[in-house]
Length: 110
Image 1 (cartoon, rainbow, N blue to C red):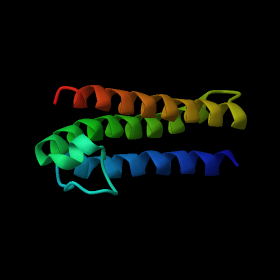
Image 2: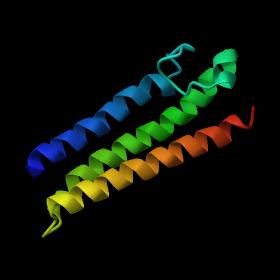
Image 3: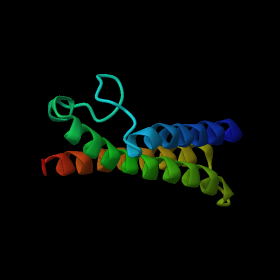
Image 4: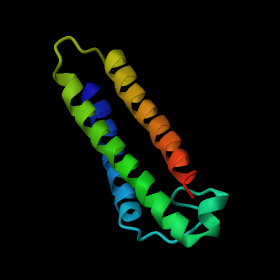
């Protein structure tokens, strides 16, 4: 069971990485589906690309951290399934909150 959970968390981290790269590269045009979508970014392409590149870097960090934590935690002796799931989910949740807060703080510069 732990193997499937590890694979699920690793896949989740890789999705975060994959989604972050086009944002960092400023390839995603303003839209209502994908990116840091708030009124201020949607109304101004310059703000859109800059803020999405910034939040994309945080998403990349979140993805890499998710993969690393997902792979390293099972190597700890006695790591139970519940503890593994709780720690990994906590890491993802905390980094997601940091990403959103930092992105909104960055947006305030505009």
